[in-house]
Length: 199
Image 1: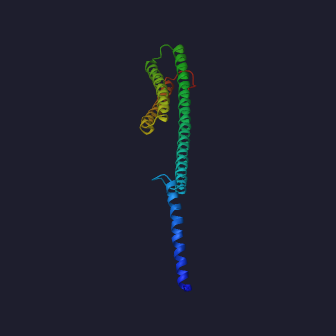
Image 2 (image 1 turned 120 degrees about the vertical axis):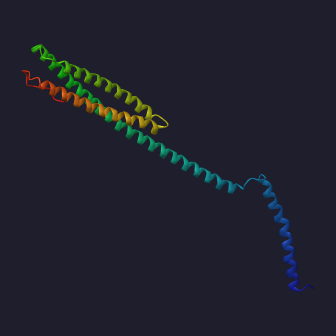
């Protein structure tokens, strides 16, 4: 009769051998069920989730940049439209002053044909040309701005725009000074009428 300890060892050995023959085929079958070289379904699912997260982050970041760019574009456009409106208002105001000066000069000629207004006529003609040229510059500036705001390289284009803005401002100031000089010259004629157009 076998001793209890020996019998127990034999039973354990039989169980281990049986387990080997049962589990090895199962593991082999599981390995064969997954395509060679491809990750297990659970691992692949984790990878898919990671890729989805990356794509969502990239999408949100792209949308954020697009929104910021659109906001900047609106702010810049509103600023320039306001500035163009001021330029147009200044042009209109100076044109009205010039028209009043021309009317005054015509009255002076009618009242006293002997008055020498050659210099004043030349100054008036010069200012009229300057106003016309400056209006053309403003119109060109608007076109250049629209091209710059729609450009893929706006930084370079805006250098030209800002340069033209400085030119327009300087032209308006020079025109205003010329009109003030003409008004002073007319007052120096000491004609009968005391009213004078104001710049």
